[in-house]
Length: 194
Figure 1 (cartoon, helix red, strand yellow):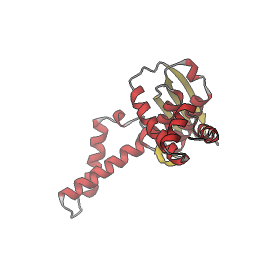
Figure 2 (cartoon, one colour; figure 1 turned 135 degrees about the vertical axis):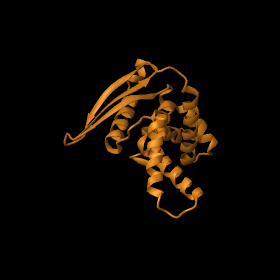
Figure 3 (cartoon, rainbow, N blue to C red; figure 1 turned 45 degrees about the vertical axis):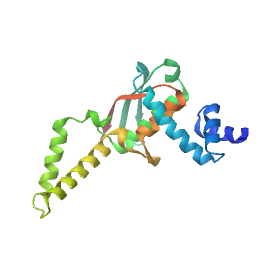
């Protein structure tokens, strides 16, 4: 039996429903950290189930970084106007704006990178390794690693969150999908820098 105080504490720390917090704590045998991990895994599963649901409403918002040298606009979508007007959705939106301002991604996801750009990157990496006296397999692994790093750094959803490098932006969005019970998608963003 899990105490109501522990359930309330987990609810307060995660913003996830009391019933889900209770189930997670029971599964974790009262260990709050294990319960958070369980809720995180469930959040990913919930996000996967909701990923096909249509997102037609949301917000367009902007952020100007201190000093006026960097500005970001974003379109963040969800399923209902009720969620779009809520504080949690606005909180996620603000975190995404800060991420884009500080980490300067070029794309929302890896699917947004064209084959042409990937080929250009690959050719540049090949040129860097041209004079190296390494076996072909090693060079191919280096190129693959550099290409993976390029994708991770260039795509918003793949980037580690600036406030917690242990989770990606997609993980952060998945947490909010689990909290809010709706599909959430970043439609687009624009980043300006002087």
